[in-house]
Length: 110
Image 1 (spheres, rainbow, N blue to C red):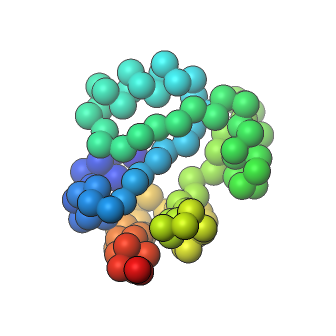
Image 2: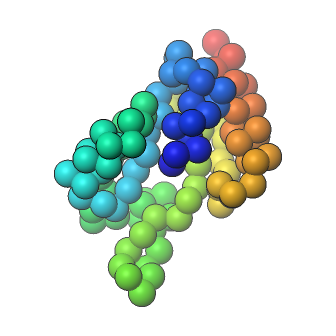
């Protein structure tokens, strides 16, 4: 998530015409505290029951509990999925170039 924060201007047009949501199984109080502490410019949503994660098929049971896979969805202006990066390879710099290109492509659509 810090890479999203640190590359926010490049990846997400500095928020111009783009809304970035991070969904986590962590409680909302934990997310809010962490987001404030880390100065994130994005909105975090809590999905403690993994309801959304299950709907998107990204919730996975691990030995420490239910977690969401790291998958990035880029939605168009109508809220339809326009691009999927599954899994999102956050440790590979080219993944961020692909994400920026997908966001730019969708943002350019009228």
